[in-house]
Image 1 (cartoon, rainbow, N blue to C red):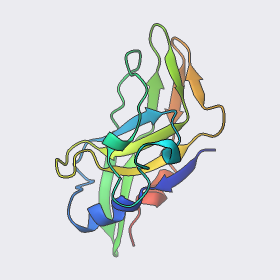
Image 2 (image 1 turned 60 degrees about the horizontal axis):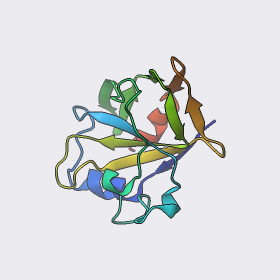
Image 3 (image 1 turned 180 degrees about the horizontal axis):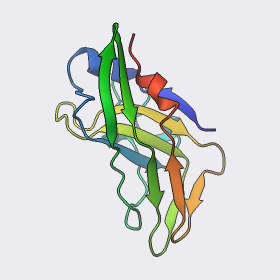
Length: 147
């Protein structure tokens, strides 16, 4: 099972009105570069934007857009429910990736703020032509629950 890490800047961005998680277009970004090996670690304070992530090529990949199923608040608890995302590799397959970042494509200041990252462990994930990879957001619901 992948390990999820919340990006430090997400809390500040959320508190300062950068995100509208109910309507914003969330997208996944794939990388095979460890956050600590990036020029600016995207998990560290002040670096939580997509520009600090070295992404793989998406030439042979289906849509990376995440579908928001619901966004609601009950008794002071906010819950964002996301539909599982199935990525499919096209002709030529896809480069190996280990890290799956979630970012909000809508904000412009800062542009493409990161929410969090899944680490799929040593060896990463490689998709050959027509192979699929499912990102299961069932457990991710708790990471975006805000109480």
